[in-house]
Length: 108
Image (tube, rainbow, N blue to C red; front, top):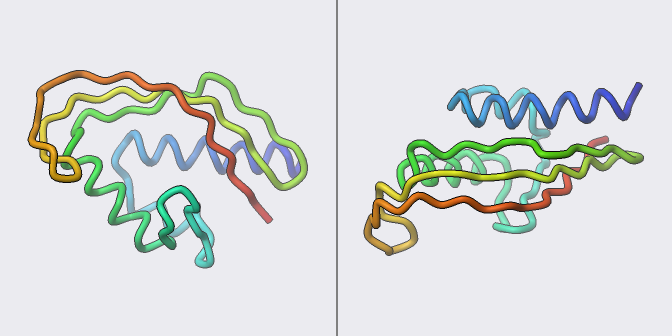
């Protein structure tokens, strides 16, 4: 049951993200959360997400595969978006991007 609960939390996070319901982040991410890729805590994560949406307002994540083991959830994702706002100093290009990634999330 814990494995399914952890996958449900990750699915809920991605759904909230895709629907721009960032107010749900506090319910889905623990207060001591650390994003090791960007070296930010929960509040920094919300700021990072908001910045991303300013740069790629149509950003969307699709779960291609999800696997749970112990307290970890592996998610294979496809990201899409259109570069419409400045991103890390790069002016908007209007280019559509598609990228694939594997994200590992830990729950306790």
